[in-house]
Picture (cartoon, rainbow, N blue to C red):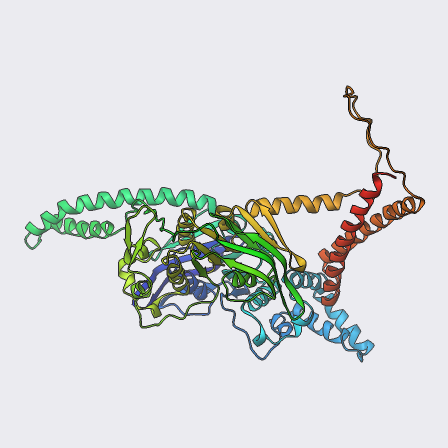
Length: 631
């Protein structure tokens, strides 16, 4: 039985039907991903199903006592509340018990009767375990300490999204509806979220462009295509395979219908007013064939490789770059000489300084010290997270023609602005639409085209996948694979990064940048290996097995081994004990953080202590290895 059902839904927007007489149902345990091109009506459908927007016709029904929570791309809050009040504003008995408990225990003047009352409430609603889960969610999303007291009207866009996500996860609804949940999250948080949402007990409907996320979380894909729904019982990889088969079959059917239509059209032209039953049936069949013939035929993909501006010997040389804000070091002593066809993925937690580095490379921000020396022939194309404000009365094609009416390709051929738009999913009819009638994703796609059409030879893309549909992402990937200049990408889309980057710049604590050869998945595997090695590092030397006998090889006499001093022997023994104690402390801290039993401040303190412990382990471990050479 469906928890949520939609019958005969229709919605018209800007004189265009997004969908007509659409039927949809969501059952317990289904984790459904809704896919389709920008402007196909995905967000509108989610809002209608969540009860936030009415359909033009049709009905949405939710089973009795079923709670539905919705996460939108632009969260809406009561701007008079702070973060903590916003997260716990839901009408939920368990949350109310936790609110009362936190209020009483944080009041230094609380009475024993009040404490007894709220503890009984916590027992009644089994809220102790729930409280631990709440703290774990807040800790994972970085909503700790002073941030809980901050007014929501003072939050950044990314912080608002994380607060909204925390709220819907904490509500534990029967049905969860998420619109682009991975936007504004860093990569580590996305990995945590996908593990949480992949639970078999969860009922979920989502829109996301993150293909790894889709593969891990979704067990069904629903495609919204030209107002019709196509369902695929599987994850994203299964969908890609079956969609190709469906499109091939549809192409064959459309071609058959068009061939038949040509013959029937001749008969219709010769046909006098039909009187007989057979003639009327044939006329009805003609109109049915005519509708089929209007279907799309998927033609061969046009491969675009834009000619880049000639790049000289010097591209960008960076020497000892340093930047800090308010005493916090964002970038420390970074040097790098960019080379032709560099393909770099820039990663790091939110607020680590990725956009700061990009702005210094492009001259939008001045470093505190150090030099950024760009070559005379270096031409930047910079796609930022900030949305451009287009003139709403301009047409789509006019926006592109402002930059270039003709684009020169790598092979010397030329493509018109209209052809370029068409390649990026703007059909000719839509090119003459006013910008004000475009969806958010379509406007971002238009902004991206304005950057690409300038023929840059150094392309910087800061979160280019936000708000783009999967079809556009595939087109963009193909375009960038053929791009002949330098490329820097900041993206939380792991699939996109893996497909395009050959080197990772990882921003680490203290403003350092680790340069790693390989793509994002290569880097994460290396990072996991490093973590495993650190966890498995022995606190003291162990006796190894007897070595296998090897035939002696004549070698020069070794230098006399230096003997350890008494102080060094003592230091060595003490280090063994200290390393063992630190390993135990690290394990305790990890268990505390995973349990979520501490207060918000305790969680923050434990995380900071774990960081210091790791640093101490590295330092003492290196010294222990040095002393082991001669003790």
